[in-house]
Length: 256
Image (cartoon, rainbow, N blue to C red; front, side, top):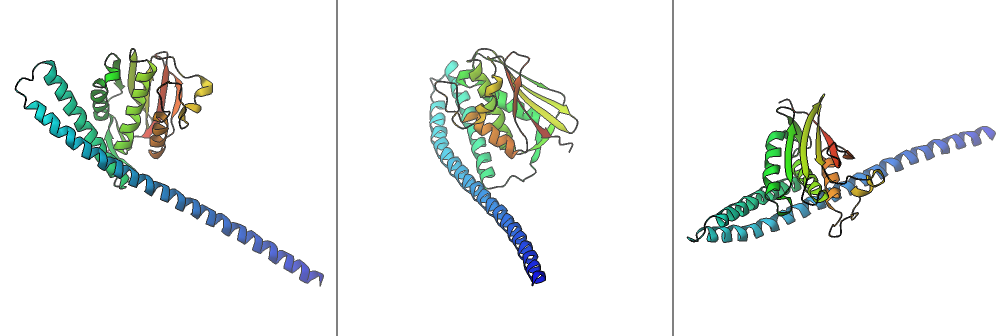
């Protein structure tokens, strides 16, 4: 009788352990499904937003073309129209990338991206931004560097970080984009000469809706963190040698 009881106890114990393991597997599968559903919904939303943006840009394109046909247009007005056309074209490219990422066209391991080209595109875009017209922009890159990354996410993360730096210096001061190779990685940094970020706030600033600006929405750095995480990196904030903040993350080098 005692032997039977012990045998039943051992059997029950083994069964409970097996059930517990099965429950863990089921929970992991549920979490994976929920995560996949969230990504799918995010992809659909991205495609929807990109579609609406392209519709609006079509109206802007038409009106820019009409203004270009004005024979009285000259000087500063011509330059302003060309800057507008260039900005519209950049937004078009961003919407195409957004739609492509939303459909999952970008491969999981990323693409071969030339950082020199990305830096030039970002600087060209930022210099035409109203809030950044009086900033001192610069880039520092240690030779030709290529990384493996999703271009749309990389571009979005860096643009948001540069604009964050512009806001930190209130439109007057220095902002610099840097890329430094370290072993098989590239360290990407955005420096500014603003007031910096207090150590106790360096985790808080990446939380949704957290902002120290009166007109801020607290979503810019949330977007950056999400992009960097999707790129396979982790963003951090340290002190900059400009006296302000330095936001940095790492990406794998592409030697192709």
